Image (cartoon, rainbow, N blue to C red; front, side):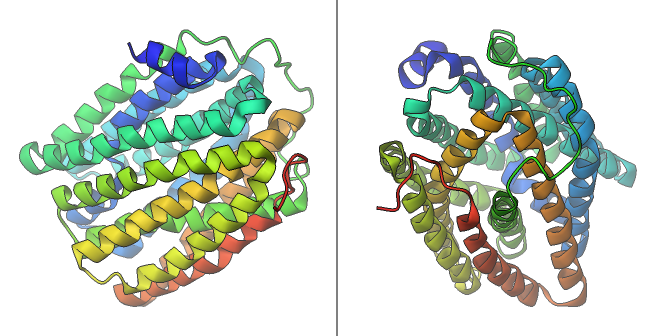
Length: 391
């Protein structure tokens, strides 16, 4: 039934990866927004949470090139399978840290998270960029994102209830089981498709993407890092409740679903860059608005909702432009962009980790949100899609 629904919504070449990503979103989303709360409940300070994420970024910087070589040689299909298996291993390691408190388990969790994201992001970027229909790319990307967000309404509520009633051990175990099911739809996809040819002489280098695209990607990664990873730390500090955080995340996601479809239609009409400008301005303003969130659940929900709307408005044209360039320049473009993103993660987490270690929590969040508001504008450096206008 899920396949039949997906067939009516996205291009036939993207059906299997869409179904797989939805199952993965359901499973990983059970834990996702709660990770900082889990770590803080286990005794970590904010700076130590930042150190965990910096370690993840450092590991990803190390594994990304060998992962790229493997994907380039063997294709996206095995890359996705390995990514899902790494995700299961990450969740098992996190569960061991929760149950026995061994810090080595946390290091393994950071490493496996890096391997997971490296395999999944790079494989999905390659597969989707080569298999998408250029005439409807923004619409398909928006529908995939909207379906993912609909699933994202369910998973944080379920995860919050599960953690509050049965404990975080059951939460991570359930998440691992659901993620494992993500492999099944992947077995149906062709290995990247007939269009792929293994690129000879692929080197670990930034030279495969224009400098302005690398700068734009650094800005995008830095500001979404704050929105997607620092913000949950804020929630863990000021609303340390699994159920409340789950409902806040679900409500804000539900509101954002409605907006994304409208942005996709405009992007497919050649207005990707104009929509990107508007989404960037909105994202920057919301980051500034986070400073006034305090610990009021209503205010936090409103700000979370506005950010999800702003990010939806920005992310769809950003992804559309990115995939247009990746379709033309192949895997080497993705490699250079990922290197830029990984460097940004390490530098950003290192910077705000130092801030967290040397200041109180309120000052840490104030500085992080202001940095995000500023660097979000770097996204506009991206080379425009040749079909895009500013009107």
